[in-house]
Length: 201
Image (tube, rainbow, N blue to C red; front, side, top):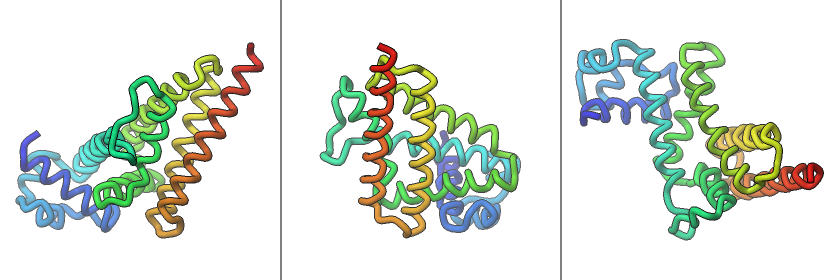
């Protein structure tokens, strides 16, 4: 990716996080990114193109910070799927500027599709990939659990994460409490899957 294209997408993430999707104006984005409006149209064609590419960029940035070290500063062992699961979910609640910006922009893009379906396919695909990743780790933790139950657990956990993230970013929930609630939910879902696996046996 070229430096200018990256600057535009970084600027889009900042503007969306500050002003929302409806507040994203090409002129303001150009000023934020330090480029001309013509260059933005050259790279992204129109506002919808900007939003689509910004969504992909934001998703990639979220993947980078959820793949980072855990709270103790080290990545959990690759053989410990439960710790990996906790890590990718709990790292969504880091009180760091980049994480707040990305989480806010992602939530805003998701809310935007309620009124305008232009990004719905992309968000659906990104959400499905997120559920699949969580389900894969849950299946590794509870290998005897039924596949449909594992997927449902992953859907519940990712939906809860989105709700907790929204409350945290709105100032309605302290970050530590959000993390505690998420840890508790992970334990509940794993316990439920273990019980289902025992019934099958």
